[in-house]
Each structure stands twice: as C-alpha cells, then as structure tokens.
Image (tube, rainbow, N blue to C red):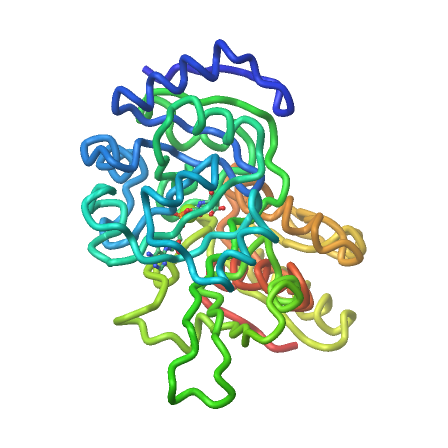
Amino acid sequence: MTTYWKVTAGNPDPAIIAEAAVVLQQGGVVAFPTETVYGLGADARQTEAVQQIFTAKGRPSDNPLIVHIANRSQLEELTLPPDEAVSRLLDAFWPGPLTVVLPARPGVLSPLVTAGLSTVGLRMPDHPVALQLIAAAGCPVAAPSANRSGRPSPTHAEHVLEDLTGRIDAIVDGGSTGVGLESTVVEYAAAGPEEAGGRGVLHILRPGGITAAQLREALPGVEVRESSAHAEPAAAPRSPGMKYTHYAPRGVMTLVQGDAPERVLARIQRELDAARARGERTGALTFREHADALRADRVVACGSLGDLESVAQGLYAALREFDEAGISFILAETCPEEGIGAAIMNRLRKAAGDRVIEA
Ligand code: TXA
Ligand code: MG
C-alpha cells in the first residue's frame, strides 16, 4: 500500500510532513517533490531502507545515490571540511539544483548509497516540502529520481504514481516541479603541483539545473570543465549513472539536427511519413514555434525555443506523452547547447540512445 498525501508546495501541512518523516525514520521510502524532479527518499544511514529504493526503482546497484540535506550543519556528519572553492559554490547555489561530490566520512552512510566509492554526492534542494521533510526526519536522505529505472524522471506526482504505486510506502504530492531536469553534478579537484597556473578544476559530471556559465561566474580562477558524456570511457565513468540509458520513452527516438530549421522540419516530416507507411505509430517532439509545421500521430510541443527553461520543464512529461499514446517511432528536434540547453541536449541524446540524423 502506498500512502498518498497532497500538500501545498509553498506551505505544506506540518502534520503531514511529520507523518512522512516518521516513515523515513522507520526505514520506509517516501517520494517527495524537489525543485528539479521528484525524489524517492530513504534514510541514507539505513541499508535496508536504501535497499528498498533500489528494489522499487529496479536500479542497478553500482549507481550511487545523491544524499539530500536540509542544513549546512549536516555536512560535518557526512564529509570532511570542504575546500574553500567548494564552500563558495555552496554559498552561491545551495539550496539549489547543484550536487557536489565530496569525500565521504567513513562508516556513516550505508555502503549502498555510495556504491562502494569513497565519495558521496550531496545536495540541498530548494523546495519547502523537501527541506521540511528532511529537517523533520533529522537524517541525511538518499534520493534518486522517483521513477522506474530507465523511464523519464517524474516532474509531476502522477508520474511517480504511474511508476511506483504499490512499490513504495508513501508519496507527498506537492504539484509539479520547477526546473524539470535533475541537478548539475560537480566534483572539485584542487590544483596539483603539476598543473600549470595552479588552478583548481571543477568537473561537471552531469549537466543540469545550474549552468556552466553560472559556475564560472561563481568561481573565477577555477577552470570549469564540461565533460562530454561521449568522451567518457564506458568502463570507468566518473559519474556512474551517466553510462545507463536513462530518460527513455518506450518508442525508438531519433534526434534530427541541422543549421536550417526548414531543412530539419522537412527531414523530420519525410522520416515520419516513411515510418507511418511502414505501420509505425509516429511521434514528433518539437517546440511551440514549429508545432504547426509537423504531422504525426502525436505532435508534442515541448516549451518554446525562445525560452529554454520552459523546454527543460516540459521535457520529461513530453517523453511520457508518447508512451501514453503508444507511439513506436519518435523524431525530435534539438536545441542550442547554451545555458540549460546543455542539460536538455544531454538528456535528449540519452533518450535517443545517441541516434542522431544530420539534416
Ligand atoms: O535533481 C536531482 O539530482 C535528483 C533529485 C531527486 O534531487 N536526484 C537525482 O538522483 O537525479 P539520481 O540518483 O537519479 O542521480 C545521481 C547521479 C548519477 O548520475 C550518479 O552517477 C551521480 O549522481 N553520483 C552520485 N554519487 C556520485 C559520486 N559519489 N561520484 C560521482 N557521481 C555520483
Ligand atoms: Mg534518475
């Protein structure tokens, strides 16, 4: 049985938060909204509780979980005093969609959380429900996205219910999430003596809600490196989660990219028509500006090209729409990789299993 609670995102009922916190304290798993996507939380110190996250999601156990805190004072329990550059990052972006990978204090977290690594990804979410729940539970909360593994991440409580009803103890419904894509995951390396200029390097392990430009602005004097997911050796990725096909709709999706929008749209239409003639149920993932230009069994306009934040917000719900409509063949437009566009394109490539057509 999954208990369902509805709360007001900005001002959740303290009685409900208290009940949900007790479920966490007693080793249960609770889905809750954050500003990025819904998380599936458990007390990060209780191995049996964390095991339930992996079981409910069907998640591979070599993929570590992000640990959520509500208060900077919780850092001390979980990691060593952070480097000065890291402190500046936390000052600038917490609470917010930034996960920082730090050395884990041995013996505190369940080994399932770190998947055997000596580091832990920590984040303070910027959402009243998440913050109040974590504070009330009084423990660090391990929480991956609250979807079945391989499905698009949940940005509405309905997505969580679709995937996990009956598989988790409870869900706190706080309406739709804000950013729509997961947090940016970073790891800081202090400059080694061999490194020219003596600059520290901040590696972006997963692009997300905080952009590379924002990180550079907050850390002048630090080199911010955007690691390409493609360049990473599959055997030893820095961020283990990046090697799995994530976020995928059930239909086969292909991206179509090119400099001239008319050519891209014409190519998409040709491929859609051919697929339909083969008996596929066709879908097109596009933007508000181009929605009228395409014909398919399902055309989904995901936000506006003029406002990439709106694309990020709507992306996962859009991917789920194709599943609901039983779409077997999907073509998707791409967007510029600027700002949040880098994270959007990262997720789109994964959803498409790296299938890209140049138009
Ligand atoms: O926005 C988010 O971050 C959401 C919400 C719920 O907070 N959470 C989320 O968690 O996306 P999850 O578990 O689905 O993603 C964890 C990502 C994976 O790519 C994983 O490989 C990486 O963070 N990660 C976690 N711990 C790590 C570590 N110690 N070193 C490197 N990467 C780590
Ligand atoms: Mg996830």
